[in-house]
Amino acid sequence: MPAPAAAPLIVASTSFRPRPQRRVGPRVGGRSRVGDGMGASCSTSGATSAAAPDVITTAAGQKFERIPPAEDGGKIVVALGKFDAMHRGHAELARRASKMGAPILMSFGGMAEVLGWEEKLPVVAPEDRARVLEMWKAACEGKTVREHVIPFADIRRMSPEEFVSTLKDIGVGGVVAGANYRFGFKAAGTADTLKDLGKKLGVDVSIVDLLPANEPGDEGVYPAGYENTPQVSSTRVRACLAAGDVEQAARLLGRHHSLVLRVAGAGVHGRFPTNAATNQYPAIGRYASIVVGADGGRTPTTAEVTDREIVLEGWGETNGGKDDANVCVEFIGPAADA
Image (cartoon, rainbow, N blue to C red; front, side, top):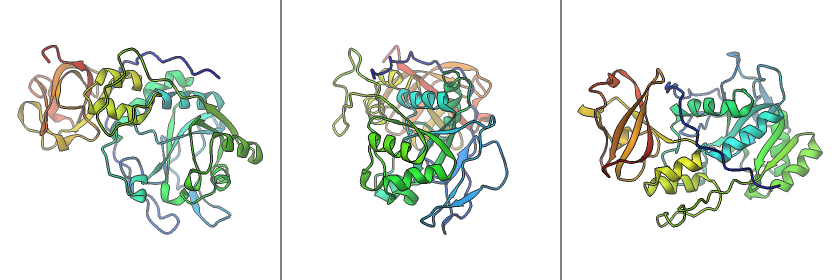
């Protein structure tokens, strides 16, 4: 199947409403679930019921929360992935899932801790994920895209069949994944494995081709240590931000990259220490930017990133921004005077 056409850039027009961090979840499987940057707790965002979670026990004796049903009672369809950058490829997985039923992004929390990876700031701030999902809603047939996070430690040693069987046990009726998706212990399962197991276990499976990333001028901008992936990927988004190429990052994301800054501890005249950032900020430089308010207002500004701070010129003096808990900044491109 040919790869889908590149999506046009989505202009973020929704308001920024910081959401609270995930709370400590119930003790399931003998240990508490504590949310991390990617959501290590076993929980579903956007759930329609405040009732206690329905916990099921698998044949292997593991306990998992059943996914709450959709508002319309439709079939639960999960898109599988890491969803760190929430880029155009991820949006396409959500769109495909919405055609099959009630779409949910399913990811696996705590991978860095379990695998000993270096901890990194996420590409999308936890407080901003709901806004991005709202932007996807129109392309997803007006359906709300939810998120469900399972602790990676609980599934890492499952065989491919045990994994798909567990998905079915917690209420999944359909699965969407990219053509390069691997799963199961030691990544033994492939997209073809997923299709075969879906037929065997009665789970609908749809495999989505990877979206090509390259456009004229997009080659050769990657610092050492980053892979120049030919497809849209979180790795490539990170590389673009590390190189200060926020325009290419926007093409990969399908929207301008947004940075969320904690106001607490910010200095005067819109000066934020870099540790006030809750997600990845671009390389040192000056950028044309827009501050997105809780009321949907969009205020143009220039953002200067240094090795110690991020400065929003004029912010807090005319916009009353210091009353906000967080500030959301979209990076548009190089500043005119850069």
